[in-house]
Length: 83
Image 1: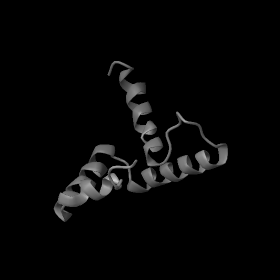
Image 2 (image 1 turned 180 degrees about the horizontal axis):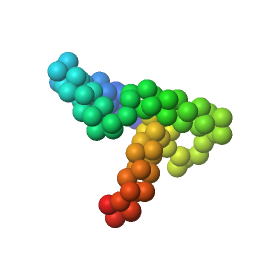
Image 3 (image 1 turned 120 degrees about the vertical axis):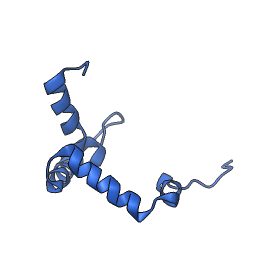
Image 4 (image 1 turned 90 degrees about the horizontal axis):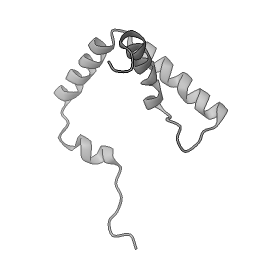
C-alpha cells in the first residue's frame, strides 16, 4: 500500500528559493565554468541526442547530468584522479 503521495523533489526544493538566489546561482555558474552558457546547452543537447539514438541501460547517466562529464574530464586531465 502506498502511504504517501509522491511529489517531485523540485516542488519541495524550490519552496524557499527566491529570485535573488536564482540570479546568484546563475552568475556563479557562468563564472565557475568560464565558458559561454551556450556551450553547456549545446553539450546537454548532444548528450540527450546520443542517449536517445544509442539507447541506454540502468547504469547510464542521462540528461543534463551527462553534460557534467565534460567538466570532470577537464579536471582529471589537468589534475589527475587524485585532484
